[in-house]
Length: 212
Ligand code: BG6
Ligand code: MG
Image (cartoon, rainbow, N blue to C red):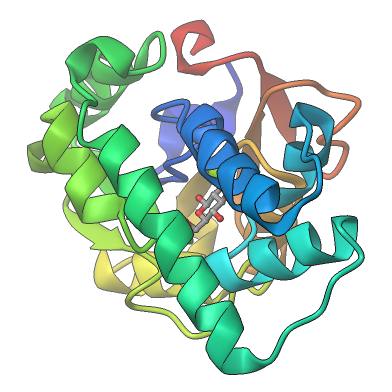
């Protein structure tokens, strides 16, 4: 593996798509909302929502259906979708951790690397508890803590500050294009998790943490 990974002092992980595959539950919940509004929503449409904040996801969904609503109605819709999503993720347990997650995070800890979560999700704390891995993180920066969504670097800059490190000492692990862009904008080395053709801006791309 690269020299950078050998020498990192801080590792900042995205949640959805890196630690756990929650995209399928987001999809089921958004598709149910689209169904109620009277239009189809496919898994291909769902790709556009990865890494994107809840309200921006709703805007993209409504755009797909060619509909527009006022702010109050949109807030009510986002809350409804989230209630359904939370029902799905209430069933999560350790068996849904993506391959290599526990081993890699535990290995980093034994090497003294500080670990942060850097996620757009407002459900991050709940999900980490369900997966029983909250104790592996030194700090959790999620959608409740930051104002500007990825590709803005705020979430990663906040995480590295909370770890007491500088951007040059931190490595970001991300599966979404917007997240890779956020990591690069923060001045960090970025490991893309997924397909190289979709994550061209990443410094290195692997299929999952099990490869590292
Ligand atoms: C990101 C997901 O991690 O969190 C997005 O990739 C999601 O798909 C976003 O919209 C916000 O999540 P939540 O849990 O706050 O609705
Ligand atoms: Mg993600």
